[in-house]
Image: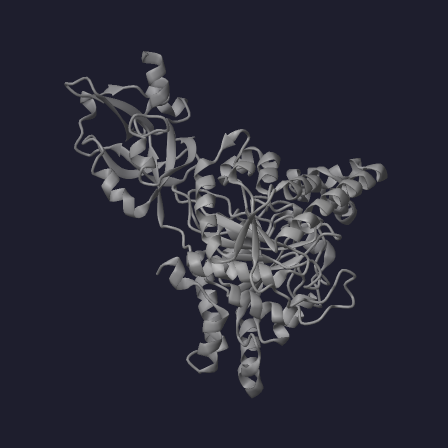
Amino acid sequence: MSAIDRVLTTATLLADLRAGRTTPAAVVEQALDRIAERGDDGTWITVQQRDVLLARTAALEADPSARRLPLYGVPFGVKDSIDVAGLPTTLACPAYADSRGVPTTSAEVVLRLEAAGAVCLGKTNLDQFATGLNGTRTPYTVPRSTFGGGLISGGSSSGSALAVAGGVVAFAVATDTAGSGRVPAALNAVLGYKPSRGLISTVGLVPACRSLDCVTLIASCADDLRRVMDVVASAPDQRDPWSRPRSSARPPRVRIGLPDPADLPFGHAGHDDGDLRAAHVAATGALEAVGDVVPVTPDPFLQAGELLYAGPWVAERTLEFSSFLTEHRDDVLDVVAGIIDSGSRFSAVDAFAAQYRLAELRAAAARTWEQVDVVVLPTIPTTFTVEQVLADPVATNTTLGTYTQSGNLLDLCGAVVPAPPTADGRPVGLMVLGPALADEAVLHVAERLAELFGPQAPVERTDLLVAGHHLAGGPRNHELTERGARLVTATRTAPSYRLLRFDDDAGRSVPALLRDAGSPSQDSGGISVEVWSVPTDQLPGFLTGVPDVLELGEVELADGRTVAGLACAAGADPASATDITADGGWRAHLALTA
């Protein structure tokens, strides 16, 4: 079953439920089966107990009027920074949940959804204290993108995006202060919608940055977003000081602002991501069929985004969590603790200076809205693997927020739409932004783009280990890249491998890994190798071209994992080869023999 086949939509579920083709209990059982099938993949922190869920569905089924409810029997997930009665709110920090106790009342957004007949399956994973855009900042299992290859899931609403992308729920409730709903949506090919701030109540949300926090939605289609918004934004919440009513206004013909691609940063740390740039340019070609395209500058949006994490708004996190951090520092991830601490360095002078600069940028953005109704930008400037983010957690996270961080500072609404992937199979998301309360225009453009692009399910991929000519920069590496393969990581084998060099009569050399418990690499930490992510349907064609002394087998890595890899063929004679294990890897061997 493909990822597209597994996608749930509210319209389809409601049609089946109301026609009696299925029941709320059966839908819940299917969802629980899918959770069990996926295993601990970092999507969920707490799944509601089966008997509690079945009691909820039994109550729905026993009420004849319930079938008319707008979300009758529809399963959803909730980011674990939002209260659900009877379930701990961990913020990906178990000690925080222990200190706070289990909520007895659900957040307003959850109450409205349940009153409409929806069924909450549980709480989803997130970057700790909702502090991050990458998904790796969690003490639970670190989630990965559905696109494989070791790519990050994005965050902080990582689990909410994965629950939708995995076909477990029809929609999920998330948050988006700096891009926390839009970034993981883009990285997992689902729709992420950040409404105008205040349309969805924040009562029952543990704040990350109270003046900017926004409860958001993730779904597989725009129709689901509209249906859920009709429930959760039906009326302002008087207990929420930022709450405001929804607007239904939309221009008859939408003017779409589109910056020149040359003015948009793609890549990280000086490395241009040309594939993502090309995919963005190709995707924006669809805009002519949606509305009138108008050139605009991205400067107000990019410059306002730079203010968020470099400015005094981080002090709001300090205000919320500093007392807990003082008593429980050992329970908080170091990178998160450092961010919470950093808010203390800002003064009142800094706060006012930032507000003055923000006012200037809001005025510049307002001039843009005089010309256009929405602006279309990339969602992220590049993608990262989990390994890359863990190696440089702050800089990579900042890069991820390049386009999304201005959203709430400039009082915007926005939606991310999955676009066709890059040439090497990475996810792409177009972000549609509008001014406050222009939600209908934003959703209209997002819906039309989604119709034009169609579902963007990730291609099935296989991790493949290489140790010789197929290494990055090697003479046969093009055989991988031409098939859409991408590098996952450079690593080492377990110590129990030898590296042999087979030479033919023409003077050509082929390195091959051979497992040997008595290998001299026991003392050298293994052989240097690379793991590449290859589209599974491209693997047979690739293997037909490998030398006869190599075959596909299983190779153990230094961290204990086992992956498919090119290793010494069973029919090859190790005695005819030169043992180069002591060199530590093929590149090192070439350098030593040059």
